[in-house]
Image (tube, rainbow, N blue to C red):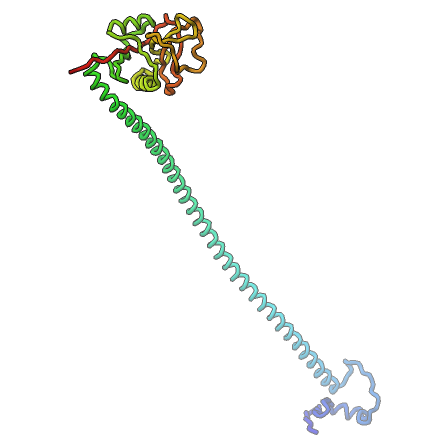
Length: 309
């Protein structure tokens, strides 16, 4: 067994025992397993102090080892904490980047919304203008239709005017193969039924006899296109009355009325209304009214056309 010697102590490497020479010399009983005497530390001899020193050094080494291990663990914890802080800092930077990206997206959305509102405002104005132009177009279309209708009416009147010039006196119109006179001008004034008849007779005719639907339609349409619509209360005397027998209406030639074109509720003979007049109505089937013969109205004359060679 290998042994290591020092001047004062021997180390038995085989038994991991430390034996001091002084102990062997002063206490021979150690060789034979004799009992040991407890000696206070400060009264120990140099050999014991050497062994105690070694033990203390071993304990210090163990303490240093423990401290070293603790420091290692603490360092690892600090390292982990440092990594965690780095991660936190990195995550914080990423959050900041995401926040900046979010703010940029919000600003982009605000800009897009502002642009959309602007476009919507322009679109609203465009819609208003479109509605305005549509209304104007509709108005133009109404005017165009009105003018077209007036032109058509004038075209139908041209033959009457031409023929009237050939077969009727100036101021008279040829319709239904008869010459008619309509006092549209204000200068003609208004007359009673009797005075109107006398005017017609003075010009070679009499009050108009409208005894067919075609005559009624033609006469009322002509009135519609020439009468002053601001004078809706003014009508036109015709040669029809029930003067001799109430409720029995007769034309001036003595023929009894077969088909009348009375307004609703007419004739009603309110105030001894015995003479008939034509009023301007779009529905020519309801355009007659009875009225007192002494009332002042316009009138319609008729007479036979003159023949030309």
